[in-house]
Amino acid sequence: MVLPNRTSPPNASSSDLAAKIDPAAVMRIKNLQLRAKTVVEGFFNGLHRSPLHGSSVEFSEYRPYTVGDDLRGLDWKRYARSDRYYIKKFEDETSRNGYLVVDQSQSMGFGSLEYTKIDYARTLAATFAYFLTLQRDCVGLMTFDEAIADYIPARRRVGHLRQLLVALSRPVSGAGTDINVPLKQIANLVYRRGLVLLISDLLSPIESLRTNLAYLRSRGHEVALLRTLDPAELDFHLDAPSMVQDLETGQEFYLDPETAKSDYQKRFSEHQSQLQNVCDSLGVDMYTISTSEPLQDSLFHLLDSKQRQTRGTARSGMLSRATAGLGGGVS
Image (cartoon, rainbow, N blue to C red):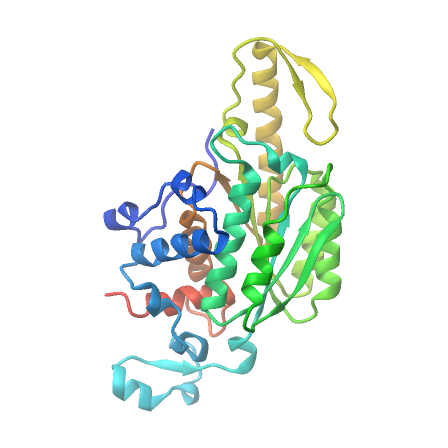
């Protein structure tokens, strides 16, 4: 099965690939902040950069000049020091809000590896929270199952990252999934445009998802989906006829491996295709990620995509700003 955006970014080199960290090794780290730091440092090493360079204040105050920018915004003193053109950024560009919306329903508790989908999703969320904090952006969090569990407004202050990580570390308690509730709530609560990053297995109806994603986009938000799936969900395999249990409803039913596999693959492919069509029509990035993949791949995918989408424009979003800043000093 071919899934979208599962390759390395165009500029990734052999040394980028060498910098990737086995996700099983990351998951053995008990401290969530240390996990996030490990992934982000691996990401920066893949760009041939020190992790300290990525957190420099300069990337929150300036951005590289691109064709079409107003020349009155050029910082000539900075040009004299660096021999590179930089544009002074306005407050609206320097301080943006990012919201991580994380699915903590029972279906996310599935895992055929040493860890589950929710372990991987929490680490992804912690990684993005850590990364955006380094970029001096405000980060908020919403966790959900059939209802909203935690909501932490986007802030940038001492101790805020720790508060986010504590909320992410709480055990799964809900049963079903209602992905519409958090998307509606975020759209109603967040007035200033920013980034909404949804991390979920997206095992939900398509049409209601389309409506809520469209509403978020109409409010001017950047929206990206990280569909987090276990390898066993991507490549269904059952050795013998078995009784299986639905993690969210508790219902048990009999499955025959021969008929179940073909039916599952057909339904999964149809659902995946429908999701991709919805996202393409709304300008929403979606990445299907196996929990066996290195976690920094998600950073590469999102940042590279945003940079390519906004290349040559005068303004860019949170993710593309970060890439522009990081790429500006790579030799």
